[in-house]
Image 1 (spheres, rainbow, N blue to C red):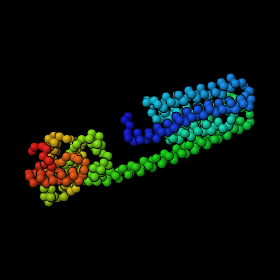
Image 2 (cartoon, rainbow, N blue to C red):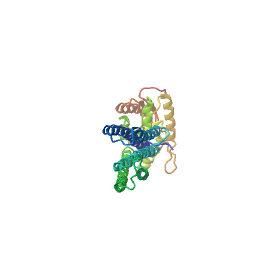
Image 3 (cartoon, one colour):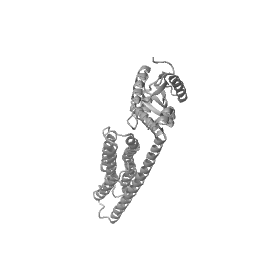
Image 4 (cartoon, helix red, strand yellow):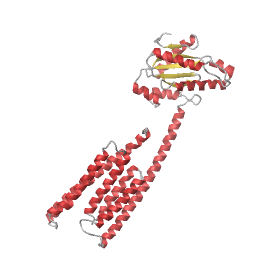
Length: 376
């Protein structure tokens, strides 16, 4: 399934969270190694190492550092994998961090403070806003804490009353961290939904303010936005990306006042709707706007004046096939003035308006360029 712009935008903070997660995993391993080295020199200077230097090195340096290095490398590979999506990265990094916490607790399970490392592993999942992930890491943290106490390589502390109390305290801390994390995720999700709804309502209001209700075309405000570089329609983007020189066209309906006098304004509105539908059918070759009244304009994504004139003749033929609500054939004629698109609205309007004035001085349905670039 193709990702939408919304999905891509949402993945930006998630990718940042994964980056922070990877950094946390690395720092956990690095800080653990540094502290173990410092403790080694500190205890050695005091002569309180009872198991010997070699056993201490294997037990407190080689074992935890080796395991943490393996976890860091695994997390790094998945984090930089192009095949892994953000969700897979979040689960992989979360599991690696809780396993790193388990390694530290397994070595130093006698210290109740090791539960705080598990708590950190739970809390960091809040970044992803996924309750299932937080729950999985909480359960792994509890299991890891129990195993680290039961099989702690430092000493067996299961029968020690103080350590059992510390274990129960660890459960309370981890559960409290879990509940707090779920609460934060819920608040963040509600806030995100509110922001999304507000943005959706704002976009609808913005789109409505730039759309002509009768014809369904862009209105004059949208035209101004286009020239100001704020137009975000697909064709405006097409123009900016392709950088076509293009043309600007302005036209109105020949004898439209007379049409309204004969058939009434309701049928006049039908004609405007018909022209709006016809204009939309020519997208993306041209982006049309209702300028006002029976006047329309368009940015044409074509640089060949001869081809443009031929295409506009076809457009006029389409309008000539109009039938009113009673099925009566009433050919609609439009006169068109064109000028090269320079990116300046005042220039485009002024030059195309002069060309339109010249067109209407001749026969109906004339197509005139501000500077004669195509032979009649």
